[in-house]
Image (cartoon, rainbow, N blue to C red):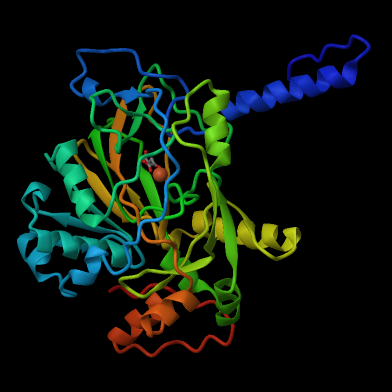
Length: 404
Ligand SMILES: O=C(O)CCC(=O)C(=O)O
Ligand SMILES: [Fe+2]
């Protein structure tokens, strides 16, 4: 720790010193992108047009858009015949989460196949494809099929004009990812959950991949919900939590970067129901969820800490993907959280994200009132589909592990 000056006003200096240290930490607030402004121009780099750019733009607050009953998964063939029959192979990577599809060129997808992809992502949490030549405009077109696109208030956009809806993830030898201000737990997040209508079927394409490292992990909120005892599930279903974008914006400001839209905080249900599958999912994340509403702070801390640790520690809920250049992942931000690894420096890693808005997160009660249908526990549904007797839990955690 740096020495603290003593000049007869030691407390003031000490506070100033601590504030300085806190600001230093804030500068590192988000390791997913470097806290420096635009990257140095490197015209020899093939994807220089998509390297990070932070223009001084000012956007109005987002307002609610009614997208009830428009989710493309609602229009899909439940058997996904046209998507699966076009594929060479469809492999579920773990029982709980993650599917890899080979033999499909995403540029050729029909609208019906896109609907089936949306449904598959809603069911499996994340779906991977490799060797995809689609460019960012084609990636945005697919994303627009899923919903109106989100523009991020703080993260870089590409240098090429007209791509304000793209979120750039970029690191190289000069831009070392630095997660030292965060525990690994805090890095788990679902994207921008502080928004009124946080994202749905989100895609990230890696356009330059390190030789090794830079994997991404996803954790299933359905699996987390399904793993809990019935009494605890019911307790969580009655709760809401505060999600905040303030620290992310303050972190950018502390680093001298421009914030394009004022941050907001939103209250969302702790258990949300996916509008297409009708399955319940735990919707809190270490990155942005700050407080459970209406319970003592000590209770909120314990419950959030428990859920955050289940997200991060329970490997039965996880899938880990090892990218190659031109791999793309589609994940449903409504029902999974994710985190990245920062082990690849000084190699270059560059990825582009397209992020459709989803609906306002819906509680079990609101979903059941709106649809007249019962929300479901994914795991129990799958057991039933396979004719497996549902274990009688009497309050003990259910066991996951039956593949669908
Ligand atoms: O770099 C990654 O693998 C993921 C970064 C991230 O969290 C995102 O783009 O949403
Ligand atoms: Fe993310």
